[in-house]
Length: 372
Image 1 (cartoon, rainbow, N blue to C red):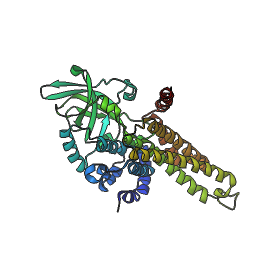
Image 2 (cartoon, helix red, strand yellow):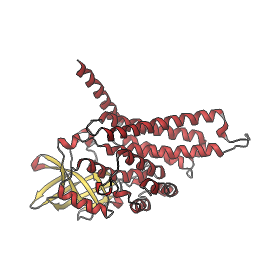
Image 3 (tube, helix red, strand yellow):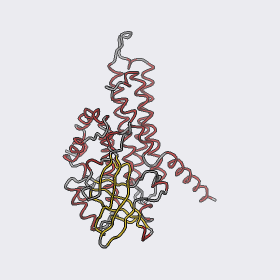
Image 4 (spheres, rainbow, N blue to C red):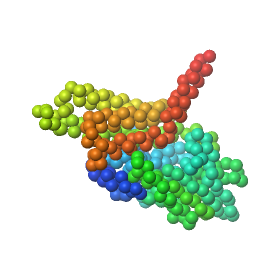
């Protein structure tokens, strides 16, 4: 049985567990364990056969259809592995160690964002510092949006090295002295990601725990793995669509002798929803196919466009699904209100819409300059 077939039975299971994630400081522990059990958390490693970007997107969409918070949380871990599989950019000593740990089921995420510091994607400097002291680096700082915080074994911490006037990514074991999680995540959207603050107070790690230096080669990478973000939100939209279709096909109010799905106005609304979902999925998967097919092509504009278009369309699809179902979609017991909230988190995942549009504009304008 291939991996996708192992994931399919988990979708309804994840959906049944999702209401519990409305609670503060909740997290889908069982879902993550299920993904470990089927081998998903290590499937991207070349040693395990790896995945193409198309396959990766397909898996992430399916997981998110079951539970958006699970899809986004595990997507950061698996995305890190996808990027390594493509670029082999980790310090070789760290790579050997990490691969062995990941094969054992260990989980990792990156911690770059900092409170009141701006987005690293917009050129914000890191306030977190790493100071060399003998054969160790001492890290101090705080990071935000540390998704899957309760189950992480390791974190890639981006920090400034003052004496070298450069920045690097450090491997920080979560069990290290001075590492703690501050439970600050109270977002109404994607609450189950448990994206709390990571606090580093005089954390000492071996000097060779530098994973990579954040130089021009880092900025030049294509980062196809970030397509796990739109894959997540179109997965949530797909779940909303399925619920609305099932409702329209079965709900028969007292004033009708047939389900509302037979009404022309409902069919027109369903058709609009279907078209939007098809367009978004085509955009997403064609972008992933292009990425796989043209390994030397710099497709940053297409990647940015896919994220913006798919995420915004996911919001449209979810909104239409709620219109089909009507006022009961706002019931606490109805999953649509959760889908509606969760897809909106995509606006704040990278790249944000303004960056995506500017990237597209710059690419278009550069074509004119080349032609002159």
